Structure formats: C-alpha cells, structure tokens
Length: 177
Image (cartoon, rainbow, N blue to C red; front, side, top):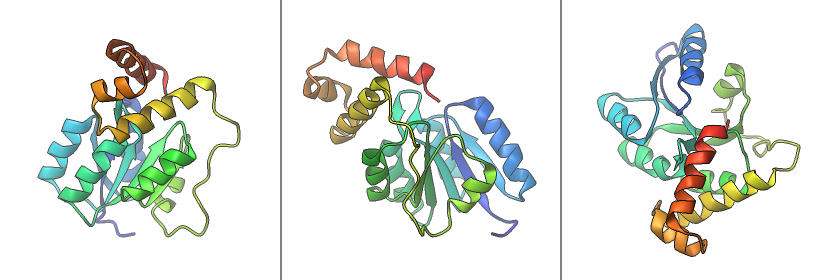
C-alpha cells in the first residue's frame, strides 16, 4: 500500500463514514465518502479511486445493485462489500458481481485494509445464526436483485403489496447496522 491511495467509502451511516475517513487518514489513505447511490456515482465521475468500501444496505437500496455500475465506470477499482448481516447468498452474489472481498461489521481499519489482500480462506460469516428479520431481509434483497431493483416486480414475486415492501425496506434501513 502506498501513501497515494485514494479510497471511496459508500455507506448511509454518516457517523461511521466520518470515523472511517479519519482512521484511514491516519494510515496514509486519502478517503472520500458518499452516502447513497447517486452521490457515489457523482463522486466516482469526479475522481479516480484505487479501492472502494461499499455497504450492502444503502438506506433501503442494495449496494449489490451499485457494484456493477462502479466497476463499469472504473474497471480497475477494487471493491470490498461491508455489511452488518452476512449471508452466503450475498457473499456469492457480491463476488459474482465483482467484489474482491466481503466483510461483516463490526470491523477494524486493519481488517478493512487487509480485506483487499488476496483471500487464503473464504470470508468469515458471523458465528450466530441470523434472526428471522435478518433472514427475511436477505430474502427480500435476493429477490430485489433478481428483479433489477424494481420494487413493483419484487413485491409481485414475493406475493406482497408494493407499499408493504416499501415499508419493510424503509423500516430495515432505520434499524440495521
């Protein structure tokens, strides 16, 4: 790692971003933050980055939807997906879409920096089983990804009213991570 590295941090938790930017600066890493899909793409258009930390859940939007767009704009970008709720399905999907690694919160700056190194072992999932709410969230995210982020099509596939799905997405963005 050189002192010249530029990282893009994408997470909807502003406090987490501020702490992470300061922590990375102490490691000699210049980090710029974005809090949602639109600001991430706008920032990516303005700067070239070496690495990116991408939260899986961006206030109800899926970071997995954003991942291919990031790589389409900067193909050499190394993207590490970060989440509070790890699952095998999202690990597989993140790697399939081009992520170099997938880590579960909480993580240290040292773990993030090392997370870009080649993997000797599969990404670690948290030891306790997910709650029913977390399993429901993962299922919703999987179906949402299958339908390209289309809420109406996802609601139909889940046999759920569109407004109910929107409420679940909004509610989850408030209590997650």
